[in-house]
Amino acid sequence: MKSLLMTFVLCIVHLAAISQDKYRLLVITGGHGFEKVPFYNMMDSLGNFSYDRIEQPKANELIASPDIDRYNALVFYDMNDSITPVQKQAYLRLLQKGKAMVFLHHSLVSYQNWDEFQRIIGGKYYEKATLVNGNSVKSSYQHDVIIPVKIENPAHPVTKGLADFEIYDEVYGNFLTQPTIRPLLSTTHPGSSKYIAWTNPFGRCEVLFIQLGHGPEAFGNSNYRKLLRQGIEWSIRRHR
Image (cartoon, rainbow, N blue to C red):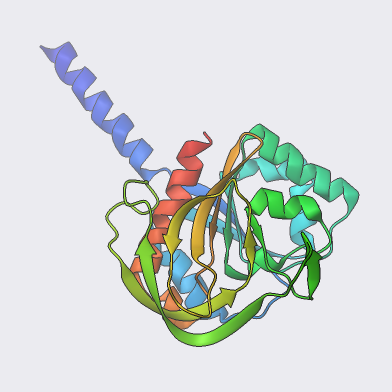
């Protein structure tokens, strides 16, 4: 009886220790201004995560170093266009190893001249008019609009428990998506492309992209916070 009781106690202690463990994130910014206090208040609110902050171009130097293995997931909120061949290979190695990567909002605009990046993230925002399959494509944006958000896949762990909602945020229009994406959110806003969150397979990874998240109104939106928290948790568990 005593041995059973001791085993039970040890199990409880072990489970408590597991519950206190925090996933370690690297939050990557740089290349685009944002309101830091509400953004990091949102990150602090998400729960079972600790995180380090780093800005570009230092982030890409870290990604190309062995120290990147300390992190369970990389959360990109940058808009960067400078990357070396060595750093590109580092991204690809991490994706082949199965490193969790979550890309937010203006990270879609990064690496305009690195074609592989759009295959990683699942889409591309074209800053300049570009000929694509015989058509000229130039993307657009619109600040401070109310966006109707439809849950495309309510059974997915990222969107579980969420119902359709509205958010005051920024839309991107006329950006292109890869045929490989698996949509999570869509919108009918006339200034936006249809799909605004998705997962995209690349290497051994299922990359997550969420287009929402421009400013304090979005950072404070409870639906957005739930989406982001569940997205990071799913991404880490998916790639453990």
